[in-house]
Structure formats: structure tokens, C-alpha cells
Image 1 (cartoon, rainbow, N blue to C red):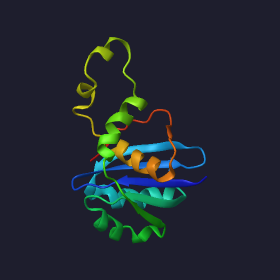
Image 2: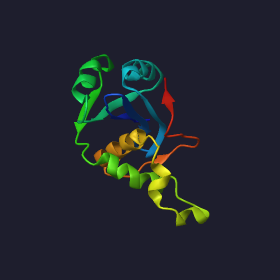
Image 3: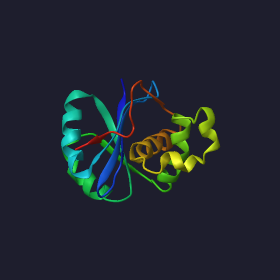
Image 4: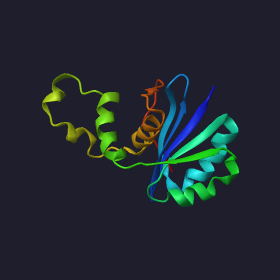
Length: 145
């Protein structure tokens, strides 16, 4: 398996996606506090055979990259401009509105959603230039505390 991690960095929280490239499948998608990212990646690195890390070039990316030396993996920095905007549209591709809810403006459904994991997915999909599917039972709004 050829697994990669994609990170949408932020000051207070980060989105993280673990995906398999050849299957084009996401196995983990979470939002976690920025202070927990490095420890989480240390644990994940012992459990998974990760080939590379893709990280958006936005807020705090330089500091995060400096903290990831222990991974000894290729770390690729990519442009993350408009990923939050794209994540809003991708949210409805992943979780389509069904029934009479389609009469309500779409924005109502994402007002309080944490889109950071979907932004990490957008970073991944933009880098590989292909869409990934979600593994069963993924909750993109999960927080680690």
C-alpha cells in the first residue's frame, strides 16, 4: 500500500487525512487541535507505512514542517489557496442533501461544520489531480482533545 498524509495547517486546529493512493481511498479524516498534531503523527507513523506528507503552505505550515523531521519522509508543501471555499462545495459531494432539505439554502448545513479535514482532502486531491473516496464510517468532523 502507498499511504500518504495530507494536512491543512492552522493556528488552533488542523485537518488531517490519511489516504491510500492506488485505491484512491481515504482511511482517516480528522480535525485536531494544532498542539496535538505532532504527537498524533508520531503515533500514526508507528502504525502506518506512510510514504509522504503533503501540507498546505498556509498558517503555521513552516513551524509544523520543522517539527516533522522525526518522520524521515518526503514532505511536500503545496498551495492551499481557496481550499476552504472548495471544501464547502466538496462537502455536498460527499454528503448530498436528500429529501425536502434541498429546499433550504445549502449554506445552512455547513454553518457550524469543521471543514478542515475536507480542506486536507482538497489539498490531497489537488496534488494528485484525482478524486478520492471515503472509507466507510468516516466522520470528517471528529475532534481530538
